[in-house]
Length: 546
Image 1: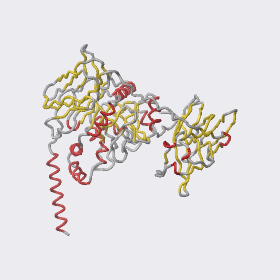
Image 2: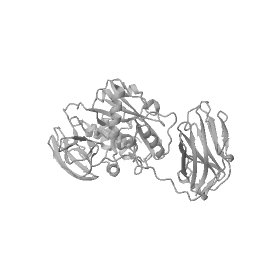
Image 3: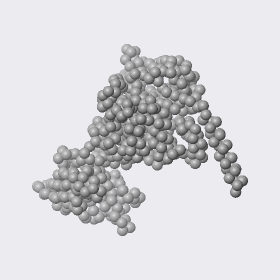
Image 4: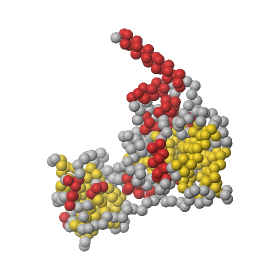
């Protein structure tokens, strides 16, 4: 036994010496250029104790200041997290840009630039995107290729941006062998250990290019920083602040007016007017990338020009770089061992152009050092998509409104009023603390979902807010709820809800169409609405369509 222990200790000593020798002396490339006046350097996708982070906002900003950052983008979890979203202010001489990370049926979205509604955001992705966008906000797909929490509708979703690399995803995806090496290197140099985990994100870049062929979408390097939740594995905030940064261009970078500066940063993020930097291999001070037409008008990342001209790349560095220019998803020019401080490339073909910069002499010459966002040549394209046309209703089987009953839990109130050819449902949700509270319109008659394609209702209220359609079925003697959110508003709306959109919160694998339904509900509850919420809802049509 002693011999085995000595062998293990010897192996551990050799392993630690090997790890030390690999990491000793590693430093990012020297860049003596001063920061550009119009670029602010910051960190994107940060969690605090407002959700599952390990440090307060004050502690995080102290570390951000120490790392030389101008701002952080706070993105605590919630639907939305109002504490995080409303933090446009300066803390410890660092600008905090408020945002939130919301959960949807397709994965997580980082959202910013909107006012929190008086209700919870719904989880059905198309409705979430629409609700944030109608309030002036922007949405980025978070960790879209994560094995545990991917963004499953990346191709279809109309988003403003997507994460190309995510530090937390890197840590979560380590296999046991790599974890052992990472732990050894992390003892001596955290960012070196993180760099060894990093890779060229080919899949993410191809997906990003595919989206940009349809409409402008920004790409970003994300920290997803939570602090050292697991010591020696998850890096602390300070270490991550020196790993990935974003350089955001603002025309008036004065930070005395925190709210104004935060709004400028949000607008630049939404446009894609920034570039991402692997700061662990070098600062990008002095770098720039823009388009200049023949009249010397300048267009930057996220902007459009309708004229031919030149791409201008500024690389005032004391080491050689590789410049890889991508046009519409294909390599347009690949310049190796570039030592020029300014590179000009004539372009005239329409489409998007973006840039990847590598350090040729770095130990990590295979990794993207600077990733620009696209510059667009040609007519501007909208980020909006028209809503799909409502399904054709071959037949409508109407439910008599008099068959509906008002139901509620003990803490809530509701009543029905019948007036001509409509019913008015008045409800007030309970005020109790942790207790679930709800009110519902109930149709308690059996029917077979297989006989229909979905539901149609015509509905309105005095204000905008979300409700559920809830269909209850029976399987093996157990009740299963199938749900879908929708919004009521002040104007009459005809709402179509296909049964294929209903989802079970019990993670049921059975097909709804193969089950019998025992009841149908329109529900207001505390999953969507706050305690004490009251409203009057008018309904003039409810039925099944085939």
